[in-house]
Length: 218
Image (cartoon, rainbow, N blue to C red; front, side, top):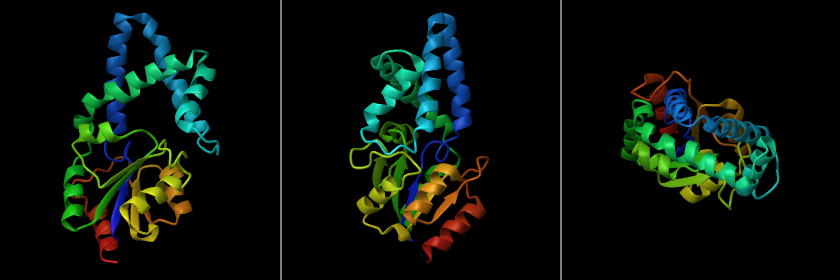
C-alpha cells in the first residue's frame, strides 16, 4: 500500500457529537428568530433529496443539488444556497476541533512517517473542514469537483484521488464509515477499504493500526 484515502464526515470527526452541538445552535437561533424554523426544514430537505439522488448520473451536480432542494422545500434556489452555506458549511466549523476523533492527528503523522501518501474524498467541500480539524492531506477531492461530478457510491472520485496521488487504485486503502456509500464506492473502484465502527476512534486502536500495518507491509 502506498496511500490511504479518507472520507471526512463521520470518519475524521464524530458526526453525532457535531449534530448535538449544531442542534444547540439552532435552538438558540430559533429562540431569537422563530422564522428560522423553516430554514431548518430547508436543510433537512436538502440532505434528504441529495441522499435520494446520489445514484443519478446527471451532470452539473454542484448546481443541481440546490435545485433539487428548492423544489422539495418550495423556496427559491438562492435561499437554499444561503441556508446551506450558513448552517452546513460555516457554522459547524467552530465545533469541529472538539469533535475530531481522538487519535486522528496521530494517525496522519504515523502515515507520513511511513511515507504513505494521504488523500481525502468527500461528497461535500472539505478544505475548510480540514483546516478547522488541523489536518493536512496530499490531495483533496470533492464529489462536486468538475473532474468528478458524481456522488458516492459512484467510484469516479476515488479514481481521481488515486490518479492525483500517483498511486494505482489497488495500492490505496480507503477508510470510511458507511458501507453503503464508502464501502460500495471502493468496491466499484476496485480499491481495498476499511469501514470504521461508529464508536471507534483512532487513538492507537490496536485493531485499526494492525489492519493498516498489514496493508503497509504488502
